[in-house]
Image (cartoon, rainbow, N blue to C red; front, side, top):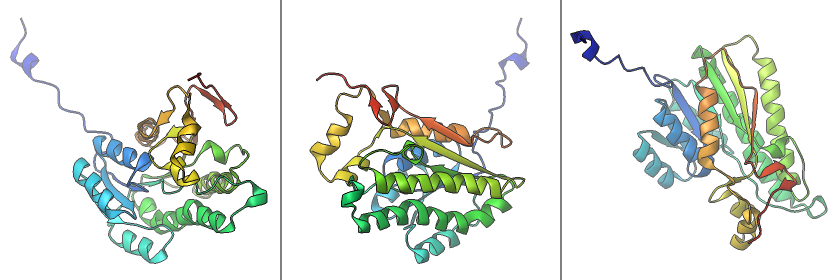
Length: 262
């Protein structure tokens, strides 16, 4: 017969992120918003950063997180953001984007400058500012949301592929420079991800944006990438996932996508 001890449930195991503070940039939509929600569910104390504070605050209220205004392209904004953080264990560098689909011969240099400023310089700016806190945590994580565009180039994508190649190189270099220190450096490189804004911001035409995904059975969604991010951040801290490439099954390469007839 079962005794009294058998009726006592085992103690609840703490969530993987319990006690750790995670900063997520570009968190007002898409992969950033999905990542913030997932990390909050994993027990992290999540701090959201983005320019659109109204959207950010709504998300933060819904998931029990903290929202702070952040423009990674503005040094004053970055300094103010960092000053509000007494401790940080995880930095998810997600802020970025593509802003044109022009061939090199028709390059819009203002768009190139904006793409570099957001994806590369902004990422460096915030990473540099938070590295002291990540080191001091004793178990820090710097995660870069890159792209398969940072590994393989394609026509019409030069400004974005060049910037994401920069992010990939940044992650590789930082990992070399921090070896032996208690900070992991992780890169997630998604392929085709269907979100509400990424492609629309790039081509600025809803019909053209929809055509990118037309006929593709189950492209990735933001939650798929957030799942990968959460998995890498919740591994034992001696396990470093250097680079995780994730694509939908329908995409074998940048140029090889299975499309079903409509």
